[in-house]
Image (cartoon, rainbow, N blue to C red; front, side, top):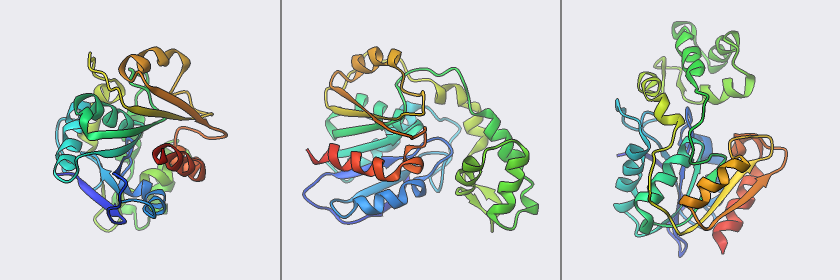
Length: 252
């Protein structure tokens, strides 16, 4: 079962389940989730091979969709969903396979397509950190900087570093072995006819105009919105705008 961080208590609104991106964790969404819990129960999940959730050699979107189904079906008849990046693909796959559990969904800065780049360099950089010389997260950040990792990503990765135990809360081997699956999206004839918002950052190119045909094929009622002066990490770059859009979309 996935590790969950719960905020607030059940209300008349459906619970909101949030799925983080690659190399993230439930904690990355903690500040926004806590604020949103003034209106409803909010659940941030650690996806497999991340955070405190179980590790597995397999890391496909079908896997992640079934992990979410195990959590959601055990407690709720229907939920709202937010998924960022890899988590966005996971919630899309969940909606395509288990549509009846989904009331409304926000997909944050990702499309249901195959991307040509990969994130192996970040795995290599984390492996290169000499954890025996790390006494604070700043120590790890300095080593990541020597591998060419930009400052925002240094801090982002280090949120998932357990300094006391000298371990990353990622299954780096599994993520590397499954990188092709992570950067792709499973071919499917399934569709989801519910309400979906594709929320992108204006400075990001993960949701491109040429992706809209495939988005509309899978999610015929998809809507689109863009956050100004915001990159791929919308919840970090523009937390206020992200929160405002989440509240507005799910309030209707």
